[in-house]
Length: 51
Image (cartoon, rainbow, N blue to C red; front, side, top):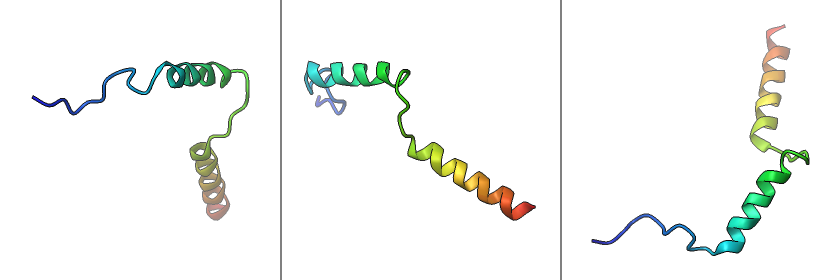
């Protein structure tokens, strides 16, 4: 039977290490979150229209 799920570690250890380092650095460095920025803009616009 053919597996449809990718094998863990298939992309190599360096990509995994890089993602872990970025995850740890995100607590120290302010990283941009486009989803959160869009939500803030929508909320601000809704408040503006409701008042």
